[in-house]
Image (cartoon, rainbow, N blue to C red; front, side, top):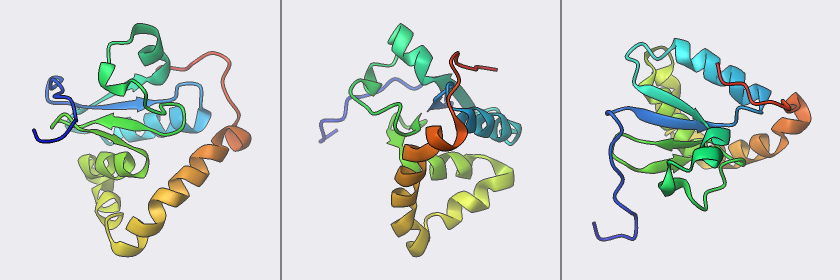
Length: 134
């Protein structure tokens, strides 16, 4: 491959999105975005499940609780703002938002805004004691 990135086995040609099931904002965003997954190509896995079963070795050392992560069909791990825009492009009703996020102004400020928002989400939305999965 030429880089130090490990080769990752493809999972049924689905994208896997790793979300925080103790974050109310993350949980409800997942519920909304699932409705837009008309092609059923997104698999949602909570970071709490990842921490329990350790079936995702390519996530080792990643800041799962700080930002969303996604495994693409090509076996690449995306995170933060980059994961959000790749996710949005896959969902027909909101794919235009993903495309717009690649434009220079949003592409430049998007990652910083994402990190700021993510770092304050528990202050604003609280935190579930018990993870919510459905």
